[in-house]
Image 1 (cartoon, rainbow, N blue to C red):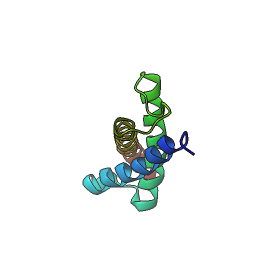
Image 2: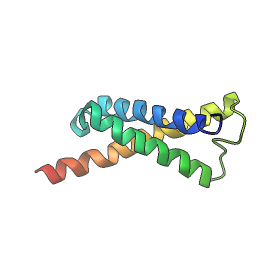
Image 3: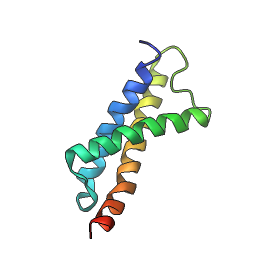
Length: 94
């Protein structure tokens, strides 16, 4: 379970980040479910990219630094992906 904990934290943080970005940018919001889905995907991608960059998100132990990196990577990744998908969806809907 300990190796899955960083991923779970990233996905939950991504959903929160996606919904926070949707609340701040109402004209790009995808709705609660859409923001959550985009955030979850973005949170996973954010954590993956942090791992590729050499920033440990799941290096075995879940100390406060590992948790903070997982939360930040997931939240930022989720928010960024929602901000990218929002205008694309709006443009395709017109």
